[in-house]
Image (tube, rainbow, N blue to C red):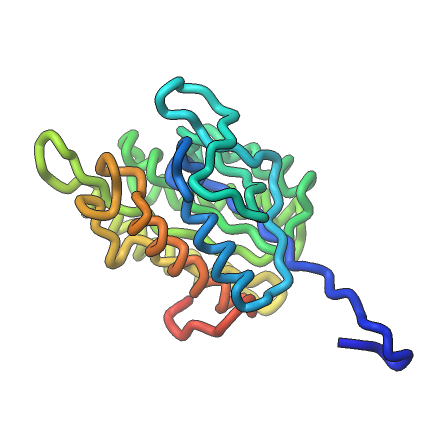
Length: 237
């Protein structure tokens, strides 16, 4: 694009802050779903920048943060996700993250640890509402993508867990998004749980392997389309 002088105009990238727990941060040796999402956006030549206070992975073997050992380095490693995070314990951090990162879009994938620690789906949605309110207060008009919660698979007992909780949370999340979505402050749901099989798409029943990462990235990509970033997805709501 160029102006009347014929000189090219610089397009400011859309700043995207991705927050979440271990499913989003990843551990040493992971690609992470953030990597696959970044590639999808870059392949379409979309002007985006991932922002956030950290760029690291969690090292599962040492139990320490700060690993830079991605399976493949990429240009969008900045994020706001942290292993072990929950809406209850880490919700207040979103104010500082938004104020320091100044994102245009917030992608939130939390709630799994809340539900796993016996918070009801209703309680978890209430925590998310507070989270959203804090983000909007720090950055009025911010676009928001909220992710559903994937089920888990107990590899020892060979059974799925969080199934009913995930289903109820997804329904409540859709209702919340419909209530909060306005033309001046958009919010859409990324349904990362439908079609996600933790038995085959994780390496331990919870954390995604590359197949799981690709599924999550695709669902987030589709939801971003609902905010005008990339192709419009008719399923984003």
